[in-house]
Length: 257
Image (cartoon, rainbow, N blue to C red; front, top):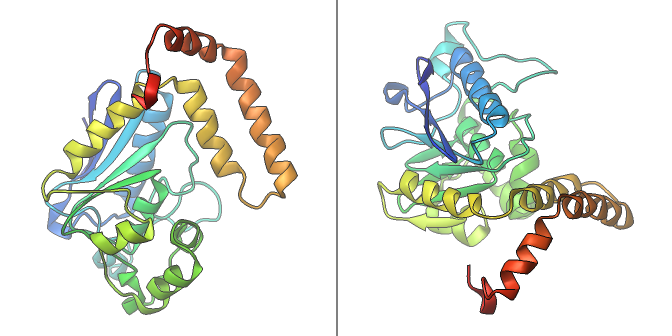
């Protein structure tokens, strides 16, 4: 399903794969494709049969950032305080997880898209970086917020100030990448991981996820209260009763998944 030139969706329930498909510009995102990308994730959020999304760039590149050629021609991305971010979905907090399948370059705004995702499955030759440092293009899609939260202030500041390239192995060691896979396998492995996550009781998993995101900036006691509120919402749905019954029958004992 094509949403516009450069963005398409492929669905194999419960997995919902969003594809950046404009290899001529290394999957750079312009105004129209940013809007389509945001709309793709709105559709995912509202599709009750879709449990986990994967974001992948075709042609061996995840995303090279904003389309600087379009910007130079006066056709830049949307720049507004409210609504979608310049790269599309980067201001959204979805209720369901998204996994980035990263091949090749995830740089500038492409790095910010990868940071927006919950997890990153990364090919051995992948490269991360704030390459927009060279051109005076700011991180305006959450990069200065999410990057230090993931890898710490010192390493994030190094990436942000110098624009240095970061390999897949470095990214994994720093906590930026969650899995390293063979070249050409990022999408397949990300979708396999998505299916694993989709098998879990969904209310519990989603509420725990939202508690993690919601605790930033809160005092400890307030964060604990919020966690308890999410926990109560989960308990009210009764998933734990079914899970406890399955455990008694022998399912999942000794740490088995």
